[in-house]
Image (spheres, rainbow, N blue to C red):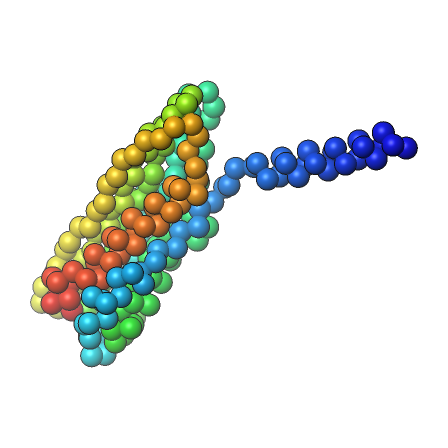
Length: 192
């Protein structure tokens, strides 16, 4: 009886430890734009109407790829589609500035996700990361077009295994900064 109870608890402990150690399959991508609120909210679009579309032109929709010589690459995608996250973040901030969104407006903001990837090269006792996010913003009306590309690159290295939570945090910070650059860009404000 005693050995059966011991075996039962040992099995539960092993299942619990295995469940806790399973690697994540998705990242939580949630840009935080509150840190840049003061320069953003100082502009007012006075109820101007625009159409907004965000298109993901990447060949695959994952945001993290971890390469390891001894096993297959690990691919992590965002829980929510990246174009939806960007649309929601920008729409919320622009609405706070009284920019209105309409499907019939002649003025259009088209944002293309050209690149959004973190590549990790995992070695035995160290790793290197390279990340790049590149968004193209194109604003058109009946008379003219404004095109601007916003990008951010970073490289880092560390010891032992890469921490997925750190990759997630860094990606969110980089995306937040890039979206903040779009929202505070003087050319875009002037064009709109």
